[in-house]
Image 1 (spheres, rainbow, N blue to C red):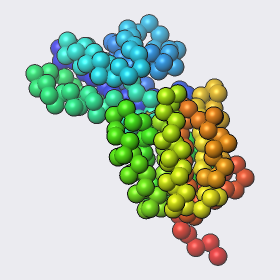
Image 2 (image 1 turned 120 degrees about the horizontal axis):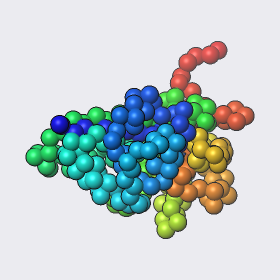
Image 3 (image 1 turned 90 degrees about the horizontal axis):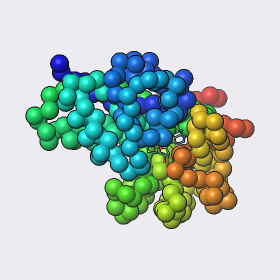
Amino acid sequence: MRGKLSVIGLGPGFEDFIIPAARNSLEEADIIVGYHKYLKLIENLIPGKRKQGTGMHKETERARIAIEQAGQGNKVCLVSSGDAGIYGMAGLVLELLSREESVVIDLDIVPGITAALSCAALLGAPLMHDFAVISLSDLLTEGDQIRKRLALAAEGDFVTVLYNPKSSKRTVLLEEARDIFLEKREENTPVGIVRNAYRDTSSVVISTLMKLPALYDQIDMTTTLVMGNSRTFQWGKFMITPRGYNLA
Ligand code: SAH
């Protein structure tokens, strides 16, 4: 029998935010493959299922295991956090499959709620106008490329969502990102900082470009930042980017 590989996004981490189509894929699957931490997060949704977890930075191994299992006729579900096609597993699976034409499987990519969207909802409505998404991780992207994209997003007045803002080994790119934005935007531009959105220890803070350094020690790899554009403002616990309606 021909195997099937479903690549799904689990959303931000709380089961209500996993879309029904992704849940169906989890239920249908013979084997669930993913990063240990994410398999743990959905443990109660997949009781008794065969699971194959791998560690951090083992994305290629995970994708190969999933493809191999599907190639053997199994129904496999490969999980990413958020959306699998945004800094997730979907692209890697397709890249590998495009090189191995002997593998014949059914493939299904199921969308998920990416961090930009879950974090924006917790902040109010910061993404009401054009926005850019930039990852500060320099593991697979040159630092200069990241700095260039930051500068151009700042120049273009895009609301800018920063994924992977800081790790224990990499802290300086976040400081550089702030400096780059301060060259183009006011000091009081709102910056939303959402940590662990829709998980137990979630926190939501609205600060400004100027005051951001005071919060550096609260920012880690489970945090997403939303830098406002030149018109974004704060209203109480909300961050709002006007769409441009004339409200006079
Ligand atoms: N595929 C994922 C992104 C993986 S990259 C997605 O679509 O959301 C990992 C980065 O995503 C983290 O460093 C963080 O910036 C962001 N992220 C993922 N889950 C998050 C959550 N629950 N709360 C805040 N940020 C999150």
